[in-house]
Image (tube, rainbow, N blue to C red; front, top):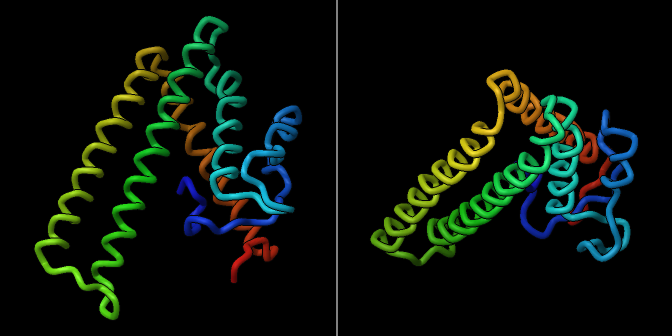
Amino acid sequence: LPDGGQRQGQRVQNPPAPPNAPQAGKQALRPQPGRGLQGDTISPADVQAMFEAMMVMEAERFVMLTPEQFPVFVQRLKRLQEARGMLFRRHNRALAELRGMANPQTGRADDATIEGKLKELETIEIESRAAIGKALESIDQLLSPRQRARFRLLEDNVEKKKIDFLTRVRQQGGRSGQ
């Protein structure tokens, strides 16, 4: 999950750099002043940004990009990451509204209103698949079949590192607001 599976607004303590992060990249993965940090905490959005930066840093080597491909790849990857983030936020916003409507204690929405919100959620999901597919297609057009396979493997590896990282932070009691 882009927000690490946490509710909006929750923060984690300032964690160490993720495992296997390139040495030069570990500094870039540290929270930067003025980036939404409060004290020794880092927001889920900051964690996501760190892993997105890790993806960019590792892509050149892992995907075996040529010097000509790299700047174009980075631009297209950023578009993919932005599309995923925007659509994730829209989806979560619609789910939060639906959760409020369907709450047995506080939900006062009638069935027609709930049906409308369900249709909106379905539209967001369809648009999400299309936008992400278009962004991936743009990346794929730049890469050879072997590079495309390596890019998909890189995405999977970074996602697994993120999950492992967040699991370790939680096990260390790094979540606040409990």
